[in-house]
Image 1 (cartoon, rainbow, N blue to C red):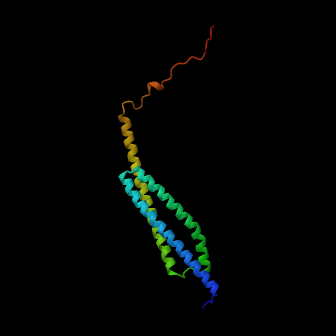
Image 2 (image 1 turned 45 degrees about the horizontal axis):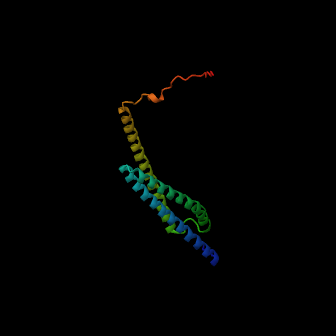
Image 3 (image 1 turned 180 degrees about the vertical axis):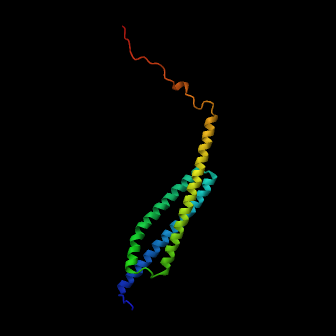
Length: 159
């Protein structure tokens, strides 16, 4: 049983499919960018390059914000797509969605790997600082300048 569509409905569906597909492709590209940044960030963590690490973190945050903004547009577009076109109407969109799900898993895994690596480096640095502090001969001693001297509380004025 074939459903007959008017030319306007057909054009509307084609426009929805094209827009939805372009949004998904754009999101896929953002995920690729983010994955590259995360992989580069891992190298910076291993090299203990703080300045570059901070720049990569800021760039990663910008990409995440872009992905979130795109997602705000994609969700209603996906609802419209499913309502107007149907779920299994185009394999290209299904393929992009599968790629997105796979890339999302890769991004999450790389992010967790970086977080674990960074935490290990932070723990190592804290231990080094602790060792250095204990080697300081003045560690745990109060400064002579920090001692409180007795101060008078009564002022006597004679004149």
